[in-house]
Length: 210
Image (cartoon, rainbow, N blue to C red):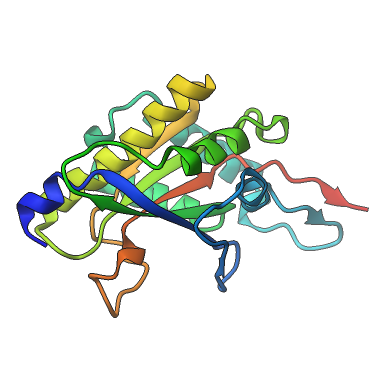
């Protein structure tokens, strides 16, 4: 694929979802449902009697909230490398789902059906009040600067659609691009599986199990 082809490669022609809640992956097929997305993004119940980990530490939670407030309403391309890495570190332990998108030639359209499922899921009352990170990723083809910009445009496209069509609060959607720096398949950087948008629930509300 040439640089020219990739630049105009913004039409989503397929989308599958990998529910990456644990080290394993569960692929949901081309037509991921709102319920599948919702299940992936819902916080998991905490268990009574377990030692308090870093995610339950009020001080750590306050620091997370403070940091998230600094990146709200920021343009995607304004985030520094340090800020992008901090978002990735926080997101590592949060409920998330990968939307793996392939882009075609000479269009900025997205796969509306699949993004509609995402919009329905994020609009569910059980996720109300959460802040979501929308992270764009590319494959390893092409230069770093170009791929960084492409990943940011992918994240921005998803955010714009969600805000315009589902009335989601833009301040609750933090967009970030990682270019080709965080490949899903590091052994095959050109694999389409690397071209994806990841959605992370950053404010997971947990409830203790009885």
